[in-house]
Amino acid sequence: MTDSDNLKQLRADLDGIELSMEDRALQRYSKDFYWFSPVLVEQLRGKQAEMVVKPANEDEVKRVAAACSRHRIPLTLRGSGTGNYGQSTPLQGGVLMDMSGLNNILWIKDGVARVQAGARLVDIDKAAREQGWELRLMPSTYRLATAGGFYCGGFGGVGSITYGSIGDPGNVLGVRALSMADEPKAVELRSVEARDLYHAYGVNGLITELEFALAPALDWRENLLSFPDFMQAVKFCQALGSTCGTMKRLLTLLADPLPQMCGLENKIPAGHTAVVAIVNQPGMDALHELREKFGGEQVQEQSHAEVFGTTKSMIEHSWNHTTLHIFRKHKDITYLQSGFRPWENVEKVEQMHHHFGEEVMLHLEFLRADGAVTCSGLQVIRYSTEERLNEIIQFHRDKGVFVSNPHTYILEDGGKLTVDPGQLAMKRRLDPKGLLNPGKMRTWDEEAAA
Image 1: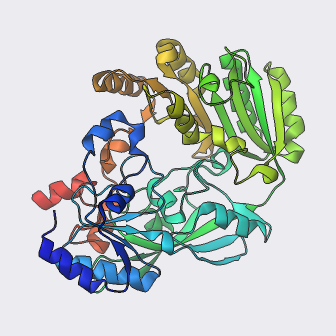
Image 2: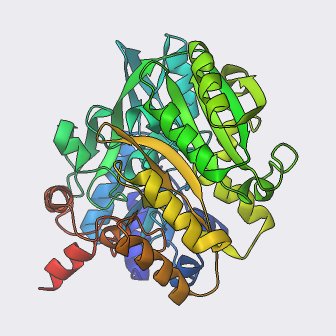
């Protein structure tokens, strides 16, 4: 924890910047959705900032960074707090910086949007649509999530069936970042250098602006489908996802009994698998052709534009919003995040479905990975013990199913199980004192100890 005299001096240095040291604010801003994980609930219990600051512009961000650097006080960044792994929970106290005040959409032109890090995705998308464009990608939390938070803590979401992840080349064209130093410097990072800040929890740079590639805005139709046979639903999604002539924005599969658990019980019969498909209007014929081929029934169709930004959109039943709805009714569950290799995803899905049954209920999001159509799992698990949870994770890995573990706040342990060399090099460059979100990058801590 920070020395009280240092905190007093820091507060004086930040005079004129909105801040709070009230316990209620510290508790609120130090939490994200890590309560999805019973493991993280225990590990992060009592972890919180000692001061919350809310800069209104980049100059104030520089002042905060400079003051924290001078006094050697940890600094953790936060967007809207919709992440799931404790990314914005300070492990070593210090200052938490709420970036939501930097929320300007700087410009939109020629299929590109330049925005500040605290701009909400729903506002960016609406502004882009006024010029005939739309965001390529957004999480199911798009109504709250910020641009910087999505890039530093997210993966993909709505749009991933066409554009993959937010970290894929060409989706984010560049970022503006500040160094953590007594005199912070701004750098413009493009292409591969910008991706060194992707999904790094804000441990290796202070992002203040991002440049997103956009997509042409289309007339989308939201569809809710019901399949009596689970594997036929899986094959339908794989087939629809692979059609080249049909534009798609979302392709979600919820195996029985998930539709009964997440608010679709009045629309999807018990025993059936639900599919949410958002396709462009000209693609509706192809959707129905494949739906009939694989034995599905259409339950509902609606205009995406009419419900976008509201709880009536079927996006509410996709990605981790599905998990959120289930949590509201069922407290004894948790979840996984997994990836299936494109050449065997249908086979492996069937294997996992038969092996685990209703202990691991399959929620699949179909997407593109390295150009190929596959699926990512957001499996809902009936939680018993941490030991059993680890057994489930290991079984998937032993069978060739990649698991991005959502039950750890350590950067390396959650994904590739090793540090990204570019991310580590960027931390050396922009945060040589190791003050940004300390404790989240194990390799940095081990290197510093050595």
